[in-house]
Amino acid sequence: MRIFVAGHRGMVGQATTRRLRELGHDVVTRTHSELDLLDQAAVARFFATEQIDQVYLAAAKVGGIHANMTYPAQFIYENLAIATNVTHQAFVSGVKRLLFLGSSCIYPRMAEQPIREEYLLGGKLEPTNEPYAIAKIAGLKLCESYNRQYGATHGIDYRSVMPTNLYGPGDNYHLENSHVVPALIQRFHLAKISNAPSVLIWGSGRARREFLYVDDMVEGCIEVMNLSRAEYDRQTDAMRGHINLGTGEDVSIAELTELIRDVVGYTGAIRYDLAQPDGAPRKLLDVSRASSLGWHATVSLAEGLRRTYADYQTAIRPVEEIDPIQTAQVAA
Image 1: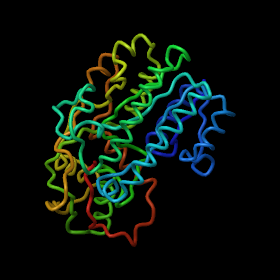
Image 2: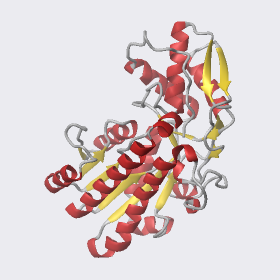
Image 3: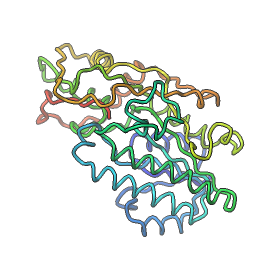
Image 4: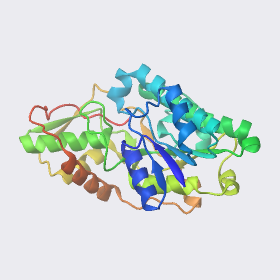
């Protein structure tokens, strides 16, 4: 099986590539300099020449609240372009199966908890990341629409999964543009090595989030990708063709902060900046569809955080000029 993993350098793409190669697949990857997914003509040339059998579409522009609020145009444009270019050119070249990776931010801000797949488009989105969410909604609707129009005539089967907040090895630790887990790991580590008296956290700490270790997510993706068409159709419908992936459990940001402080070994104080937004008050996915397939997350949050911090320590860059008392951002 010749499989293209789009976005193989990101955390999700790295984990997906690693696991597919362990399973013996011929995994095709391209760096940004080799293939710009925003360039429609370049993507068309790639698919026309590479004879791809399957696609895992993990490429995306991602970030926390700060990044989403600072770069809304880039978030909607780049994610729309990636989704449309890859999906359409995969279809044109004859790729029969594609998996699109979305995000739990596609659901309404005040959705009933836990969030079921059918709640999509049932209310207003979280304002801080609406452009990103709309692009992700468009991506999954692309898959649904191509299936509806071309599934029977061309034999395509394009699927979508909606993971909850992800973390793990290979994450982005940028001080301003990362999600909450890598941001907190970075803050606490820098505060520890500089003996800083406190760390300031963006928001109240009351927002609740669900976190899924990236390797668990990849196993779920492969499970969904390899389902028979009949079984996938039993789990979804033509206008709600996606499956949630998560743990079914959540924690408050304050609880997460304490867990990460303990893992890192920081002993200073934690302060909360109440003037900054929390984002959606709660995002917990209903994962009954995935569970009915026999898939379950296996890595606990505490163990996953330990593995992630160990990975961070092996990849850390020089930090002499980084201010350890910068604001950590809650995941969007």
